[in-house]
Image 1 (cartoon, protein in one colour):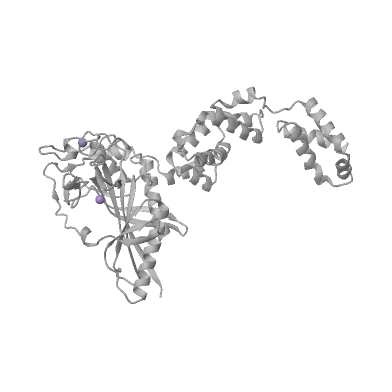
Image 2: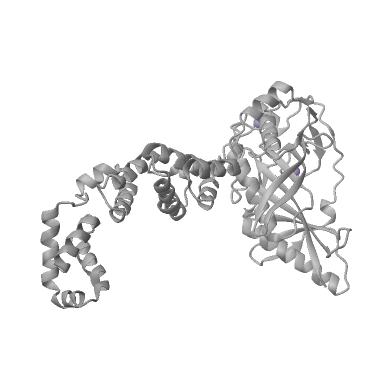
Length: 475
Ligand code: ZN
Ligand code: MN
């Protein structure tokens, strides 16, 4: 029988504000346990929360970027539950009136663009952390209490594990373009829960769903959904029933397993937080946020094709990350050659970033310096081959291209007399090959070019080498 997979995702995105959502505490990661805290995030009696303005700005930005309806008034609510890492006994979240509703994310898949609709985007605070892996005790670190999150809830519009991962990557791209989150999944800035069910192809009704938690990479999202869907199919095929429950993804065993279902079947007793006034968004605020939206990848990619005449594929690669696109544009500005800039950024620069596993912001060669290197090639001072060596030296030394070429004597030799001398040496040393060439095996010409370049350590101007070789061999 043919089953169809049905997936909806709930994504928690940590905002990159300097201070927490309802107090002035720092959000800095990696501080000693329980040092980024105050009476508000500890929920001491009498402490009152004040909403961080940027949290709403960021929620509205993401809402605008995903075509949501922005609520002119929204409510912060208490979601009540007991857990050791939640000193307040409730989480400030949104329930009945979230900031954003009814949006859409355009997801690129191998089968073309798919639209995943959003139910809502709301703001909430993070909880603390229980640490179980030190001795026999459990420790609580509440540094993370009150760190602002956006919760992004999709409709069950996703139909494959790959699509789920593509949707997440698209969300990450959007929040990074907006500059509201670092979108780092491994460090928990993006956390994803998946609601998974299967149904017979063509069926109208949804099957019983399970929720999977604890997936901390794009790969694990894909693997966990694939695993869970197959588990559903196996249960149904053997005549069983799916139990609605929450399951954990175990990356070591590559399987999902049941978390105790009842413990998480909560009645959260939501109600409006009496300590926080309703959030109002006026025309002026909305207009300001709209005006300051960045140019998004699709638009930017189209502009790159139009303005720089580079292929669509290249434009797509260059705009995948905002910082890379910015870097590329700076290189073009400084050398004036978009095609060469594109080749260098897509080739050497992206390769180096990947090898070193660093973002472009920490890349040691500035766009101006890369532009300088490209300028030296265009001006005939160095060949492309030598340029790659110079680039490596730029990475090692931090010097600019011109200084390296000068110091290491890498400038291209166009001096006819010197090239002529080397060519003659090569010809004299290889009489056999010369005979072959002269008896019509002209394809051996490349051998002579190679020998000359080798003798001159790649620095000979290839045009001049070709000219002189041809003259001497043919003459
Ligand atoms: Zn605090
Ligand atoms: Mn949540």
